[in-house]
Length: 212
Image (cartoon, rainbow, N blue to C red; front, side, top):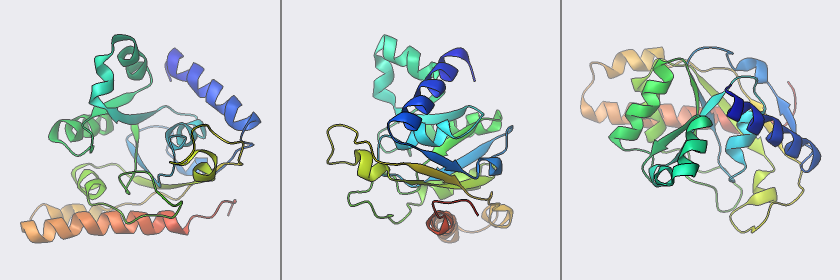
């Protein structure tokens, strides 16, 4: 963590502890070093800082590339390890940036659902995360956040003091599918991307808001 990231990390942890009475489980499942993909459900703007606050290592986040056009905001976002991507997060440039961060040994948070839930329920996974996983060599840690929809969902103008929790699952390895993807045809390749995404989402769904 650089100084800017650490200051933000401390502030968010304090807010989560006092305003949201948060809890974190399974942080030991996240490697302290090396590239890792943190695949989380997405219910609120609170999700990225919540996932990051539970870890003692810095992680990388995604943000729209347009936000970096503002000088001061761009500087702050870069200091917080934010990766610029297009609106959908699936463009070639964004993927290259994500894979580059993973190759350099960074952790990065991705949302298999692609967007925030509208009703608080888990959504089907999109194939985009499967593409990223297959093209990388990083392990995938499923993550589930709880309470963020109730605290600051799409319909809330201001965060409510609702209890939050985040749980990190055991790392997943997709080596067999990565090997197959190198030689299969395009039809099967698309199936592999979706298969990976579905398996990750299933692992997220199994996580419960308590210690094992």
